[in-house]
Amino acid sequence: MSPESAETIDQAAYAWVARLDREGASPDLVSELDAWLADDPRRRGAYLRAEAIWTKLDRAALAVSAPPEAEARPGPRLSRRGLIGAGAALAAGLAGVWVVSRSQVLATAVGERRHLPLADGSTVDVNTASRLQVTMQRHLRRIRLAAGEAWFQVEKDAARPFVVEAGRVRVQAVGTAFAVRRLEDGAEVYVTEGVVESWVADQPASRTRIAAGQSVRMTEAATAPGVVLRAPAGEIDRKLAWRSGRIEFDGETLAEAIADFNRYNARKLRLGAPDLAGRRLQGVFRSDDPEGFARSAAVVLGSSVTPSPSEIVIGGPHG
Image (cartoon, rainbow, N blue to C red; front, side):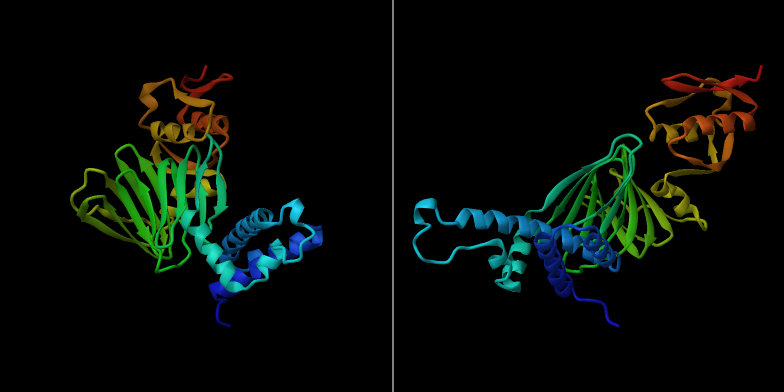
């Protein structure tokens, strides 16, 4: 069976919004809607667009309703249902206006993660302490990553490239899945599906092609292609374990592990014995359990843990 066209999905989404407005959000109807949304990732974006259009139609109906003194005069009154029934052309036109101006800021606090649908049918997983601005234009889908990290599952649309901006670093995809982490001097890019291109603004010679299973670190000062690394099996999944609330270490130093945990928690880890900084660790831990990690690390390293309400200190021999 061939996949539904975007037009068919949009029409169904408008019908769902109208039905919910007419019948109310009963548990059975919401369950039926959830099942429809789950069958195709594009449907959630279409539904969000339809809701926005419905709201605009409601405001339009209020704006053009006759004033009280004209109520007795014959003539048509516009209503939201009347407008929505005017045809696909009206819906498509309003949808276009909404998409062109659609812009939103997504932000997470320390320790918070969010999985969100975007208006074009794409989805984004936003990591801890991150901030990004999403702008959907007629010929461009642009995401500005001001801080933190995000993983994108991109809906294919060759007419509207999907571009992530991390400072001066750019990452472009049409239909693929990839993560971008903002760094002080650039960005790291991990590709989990398809192919993306990355470059530095105003430096066309820096353009770099990255395929699934590869990663690259792009610096804002780059004037040549970045060095693409083929990740060992499972390495990228390990780097992106934060999507399910985990941190996985495979040979990182204790100093690196502490820095990683501190990204996710207000209660910070601190190294009390500098000679332990370079000791390497392996294991899988909950990102929201720094004390559990500290106690596990202390056992392996033969050290102690000193917890307090504000911090957890790793270091010093037992006893």
